[in-house]
Image (cartoon, rainbow, N blue to C red; front, side, top):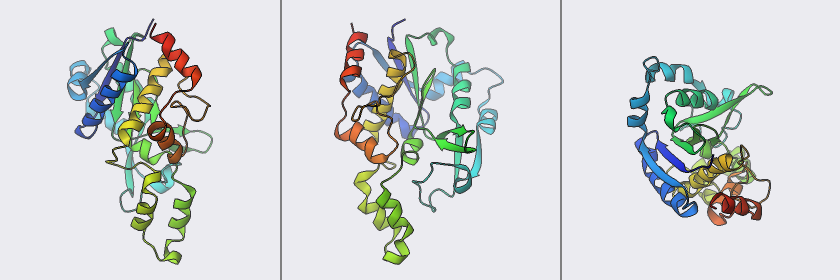
Amino acid sequence: MKLSYVHLYSSLLSTSFLAKKVSTYLHEFIPFIDVDVRSFTNYFRKNMIEEDIEDNMMIQLSHEVNANTSLGELQNSSDDTCQKMMIIDGFYLQRIYSRIMDKNEMQLEHLHLIFEDNLVCTYDENDKRYHARPIICGSPSIISISSIIEGPAKPKGYYFKQMLKDLLSISSKEIEKEFADNFVSYDDPRLIHVATGYAIQAIFFFLTNGNPFCSQYPCRLFNSHWQEELIYTQVINPVLCKEHLRILAEAGE
């Protein structure tokens, strides 16, 4: 079945503007697919089943944790802004959302894409830690704005200077300012382009039967592990490789 519809949802007002902007870019990128933005609250309230009361869901989904001891890739927040953070298991959240979505829209021709404010993580059995995941692909797909910022690593020089800031007699804010162009932050206008890139990855998850990433650099589907990679592939040079351009062209036929 051909992908025909992309439905965007924002979990809070802070991502509502972003979802609308991403929708505009997707209209230009994939004109053969119908893209719409929906009210997260109204849609899920309409389809919520009785036992899935929001408070009970969040008790199961999240817990207050100390970022230093529980998260493997949460290296991007300063101590004063992120001593404690709510984390949500991405796969569990995905299962909850799938239960309360309109069953008539769960066919492969529909892609549901939710922009989440909270930190979305998955648990790694190898190191027994949670790792921030900017995107969880599937039905529905979830893009975490916090995980985009907290997951991919900042430049090595940034961490080096943070470790030696007392010796160098510089403050964390000065270091943040020095490297500001090399990573995305909260309220960063570049987040719109980065979020659009992840939305495109979610679309290719459906177009390629489950393979949203590309090993070719630069390609907009490259699985970036560093903030600088993310900025280059999504902001500076947001292009697809020849193979994925071919796949996109065939999807539009």
